[in-house]
Image (tube, rainbow, N blue to C red; front, side, top):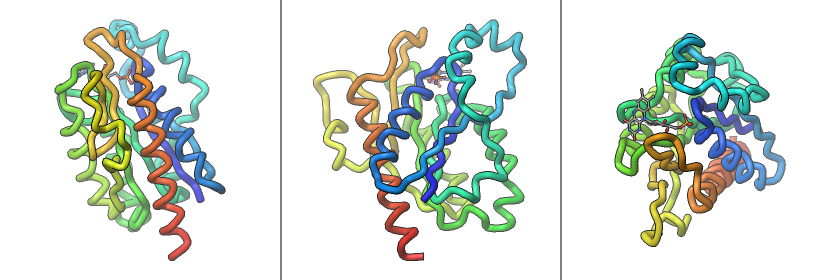
Length: 205
Ligand SMILES: Cc1cc2nc3c(=O)[nH]c(=O)nc-3n(C[C@H](O)[C@H](O)[C@H](O)COP(=O)(O)O)c2cc1C
């Protein structure tokens, strides 16, 4: 069983969450879990002005995904930072290259799941995940979120990301906050949950 974690991260927050998702998915026996980035679309000059060149180096070892590899996966867990309450443009462009897969029904019946990150607590995490789900539904994917059986979702003693729609982290206005233990636990839970469901589906097909 193959689980792909496909993400974009500019400053490393989604990258850290993706690593936690991978840890969780890897706990399900026999899961071959792979981490992929989507291609960058911004010119280097723009990335430099955004202070993204240094953090990008820490993710350079992660292979870039080719859309034609997606049909190999039993489940795909997508990670994207919020951009004005939506997925980032890099992810949008990647998904817009899946038209041929759509016409072949190549992703129909695969498990799809989404996690995210935003600067502010109410800056669009839920809208980012829910609007992302629309594309996955068009591809015929089976949506999986983050159930309330992840108890950390009920916490109000500290600021935390996470909703029934998927794990998330709050990065802060200058990206100064890295994912908290609770947010990483949510990401691990989501990875494990997706892999468990994908395993059950693969045994039935
Ligand atoms: C163009 C742009 C738009 C953004 N829009 C939002 C937003 O709507 N709400 C919010 O809270 N953060 C917003 N952010 C902050 C990013 O979501 C934040 O930098 C990101 O989640 C950090 O994750 P990363 O390090 O993995 O890229 C925006 C950032 C950029 C560059």
